Length: 50
Image (tube, rainbow, N blue to C red):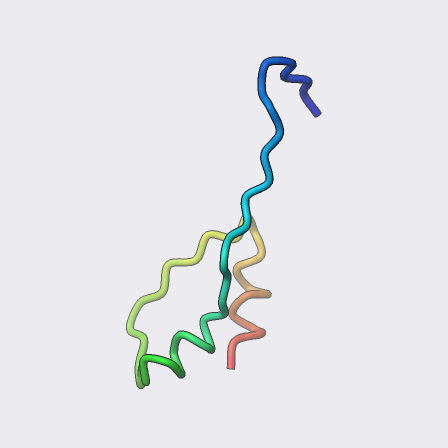
């Protein structure tokens, strides 16, 4: 790792969800195109989708 002595550490909390929950919440019946950028784990991402 790099040492950045002038940068102060902050903890940021963000809310996350799953694609399955978004599909259910908004009652999405079909996805024609889905852009995924998961640093080489695209196949795994598609395999675990319902």
